[in-house]
Image 1: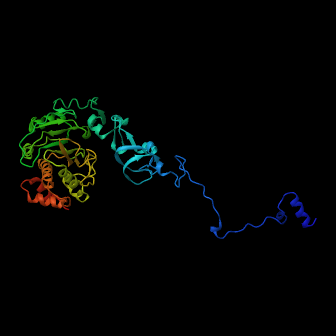
Image 2: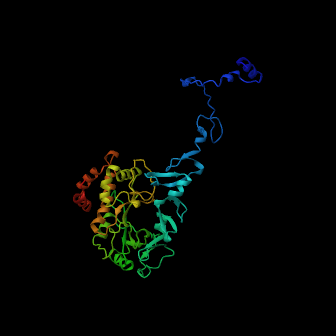
Image 3: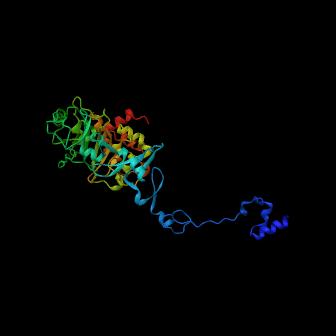
Length: 402
């Protein structure tokens, strides 16, 4: 059979006669522009409507991003924190002010306070009851106490019992105790009242409570429990003028064995009355105490780092709003502003240094412009008015190396 006959047979069977000669070589395309492509229309994965993106613009409003892993998640499925936290992911790195989490990251890096049911970052929770419960710092301070003797943290309404034999004085009140304030002294013009909260550590609570009251007087101060410091208590003054505070502390001598600066747990907080302060004036103080360029000076004055959990220093602007009470200047109280930066100290000159810093800050910032809120201007003011702030002036002159 010749080739013509074979071709005729292929045609008769409906086959391509070219196959008689084998498959043709594939044509090589050297210009990709010659290839015609057809792009299938894209649909939104949420609503199914035509879209140039995997998620259309309308549906995108229902999505957000996890602040830790950057995964896309539905807003309804996101776990949100009222108090942003810093996270150190397992893979390394650092993520600041994380507030939005996917389920997986929420399980890894956050938890709920067992008392108030509010969700916090793991670093903002404290283990209690032998590690079986975790609570936030607010609930811990209000509801729990740590015992050095048995190394346990117990609820205040069900204490371990180790301290009972030590405090039979009846002078140390519960953390929530708040008597009617007694205002002592008459402020000079443009001055307010000050109240001190000094946290102290001691193994002999009852004995030292009696000595403190004998020295300062129960008409001037009262004592409270504070679960955040372990063994010890908090010395709280009624509102005094600066002159009366100076008189109160002038001859104070801490009982032997009572400390405030050595454990690292104790602070000294000063409340200043809001009366007579405008919001703009308060905002100037907030900027002064939180400006990054003033951080070194603030840490020097406070005698502790500005990263302390109990008194965080954060960059602020003149219009910044208060975020939480654990800041350098706490604005969450209705009748006072609270200076929280100071490390605890039982030395008279250090207590007065802190009080003078508060009074000087209030007076100096009253008429300052935003651009004048630097620490060098403040130091110059203190130097010029050294008679009003003798302990503060001396502390800066002898210790500041900036």
